[in-house]
Length: 170
Image (cartoon, rainbow, N blue to C red; front, side, top):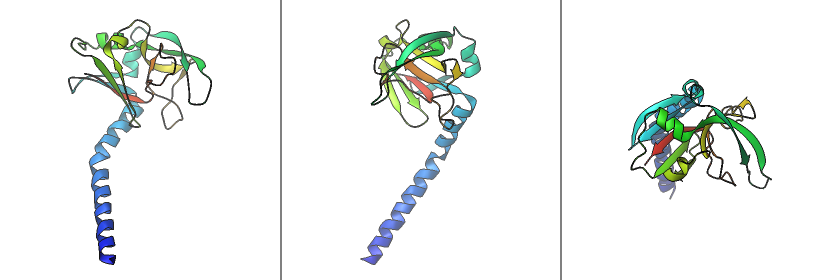
């Protein structure tokens, strides 16, 4: 009986160790994405372009009002500063034809998906970098950025993606 317990413990330690070793590169990429404030845009499974904060600021930056609804709390109206996601995709030369879903992935593992039709609506889906005139801040700083995807017409803000590091078109 004791021998079986030791074998099970040894196997579990080995599995945890191998998993940690395999994910170290992914962790480094997430950390880099946060430190250098960029988002990777993928289409068809491969990286198409990286958009950093400085490049984003050179695009058609707008302020948009949106309600942030948190669990168990009343909605809060905020002014976000950023660029329409459809304009980011156009500026980056990403072809949206034949794609029907946009999948956003965050540093913390959160994933959210929205339809391409909704993404291409005017005044709806934004890649933002400020809230109420202040930078979003990183996860380590207690913020929701440095980049975040918001859906202005989403009354519950459930599909928003803070700490966004990757946007994939499928």
